[in-house]
Picture 1 (cartoon, rainbow, N blue to C red):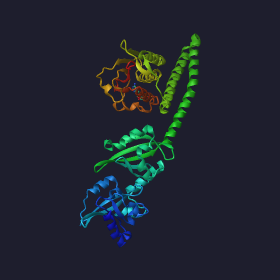
Picture 2 (picture 1 turned 30 degrees about the horizontal axis):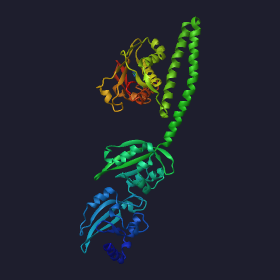
Picture 3 (picture 1 turned 90 degrees about the horizontal axis):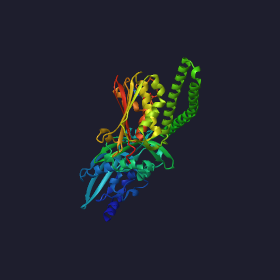
Picture 4 (picture 1 turned 180 degrees about the vertical axis):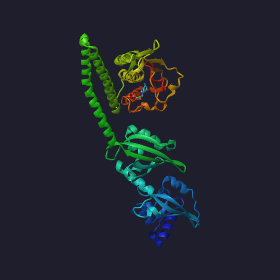
Amino acid sequence: MTEARSLEAIVSGLGFVDELQEGLWVADSHGTIVLANRALATLVGLDSPKQMVGRFWQELFPSAEAGRLGGLQPSGDFPTATDTIILDRDRRQIGVSLALARKKVEGVAWYLGTVVPSPAARQPGVASTGQQVMENSVDGICIIEQGRIVYVNRRFEEMTGYTTSQLGRLGLDRLVVSRDRNSVARLVTEPEKVTGPVNLEVRIIARSGQEMDTELHIVPTASNSHTSLLCFLRDVSRLRRAEQTGTDFIATVSHEIRTPLAAIREAMALLSESGGAQLGDRERRYLAIAREEIDRLNRMVDNLIQVSRMESGKETLNLMPVELSSVIRGSLASLSLFVTKKKLEVSTELPAGLPPVLADKDRLLQVFNNLLDNSIKYTPAGSTIRISAEVVPPDAPVLSESDLLSNTRYVQVTISDSGPGIPAEFLDRIFGRFERVDPHGPGIGLGLSIVRSIVEMHHGKVWALSTLGEGASFSFVLPLGDNA
Ligand code: ADP
């Protein structure tokens, strides 16, 4: 302390340090600032240079830079000059030219630093292009170094309602709701494990308490010895609300359509039964067409209701051991009109004693309805559709898929047809929503996406194989009902 006081007395006694244009600090041999001038305080947004006294000079810099500067080892005669970044009171970054010197006075070492804002930062209002892009981005941006937020742009502050320094203390993981906290905390605390860009959907809680749906895009950037994380936060709550409105609309309309459809279907069935002998061939044909189309409409409505259920996140499964044979029978019964019309043969090969699967029976019925509906639609008249099932052998590669339950026995179901088949590049894509090989073909492209969602909700997996021109086969695996 005596060293500090004596130096301060000498320098401030000279009375010129506050006249300097450059920001200046003097630190003792431990690196503690004992003197700073007014230009430095102004640069970092402090009211008085005294507020800097007692701080470690390397704290003025982002940690990555501080490490680098600490290793510069300036010698007394030749101050080391470098371009770097200094942090202001709110930990915003300012580009500066820095000169560092080490002076020995009567055997005691002192560190002197002077900083001058780099040209872009010096002109008021003209930041570097990079800074301008960051500051004016429509997305919130923050930079995390060693677990700590060291920079946020204006939009990030607006979205969260917190200032940079508050966010620096809070941390990114504390901004998100508890449901999403672990996944964010893991990335922030172990940035070196983030080897590529990561996208997360997280809900954040603003300072006002208001919650907001966001997409968080995290990009790792290696600087010196450690990894910094560049985080982009996009507010998607309006988009989510619009999607919700669409989903609610579909759900309501589909439900409303279902009731009159059921009544029409019932009336048709009565008509064809009671009409009996009075109906001529032509009337019978018309009635059959009407019933087929109503069945198709019914399946479409079922699919729409299913999509809205899954979208709303309200979908829960009523799991129980289910006999595959009974579900297949139910599905074929509802499609029998089409099977008869196309004179198709359906062969079902289930081994005797096949154990039940653990499934929601209604949802599983929908899986079969959608897959069989497609096979019937695409296979040529007079051909055969094959349905087979078997317990998956314990060494089958499919069991090592990451989404499947470990130590669990599975059943594999395969439905094959001899239709036109599916081009290789579509084999995976067709499970996406609204994906169709022929965009002008029949259907709306929802059936397979529902199949995939339902199968995955059951911890299963579905895939397609095909040889063009020879047919397609769809397989899925589901856990056995007796695993527990
Ligand atoms: P939709 O049948 O309503 O169009 P799907 O999601 O059930 O929707 O099917 C998506 C697309 O996959 C179909 O449009 C078709 O191009 C292709 N596809 C599905 N099943 C078969 C099949 N068995 N044979 C040939 N193509 C098929």
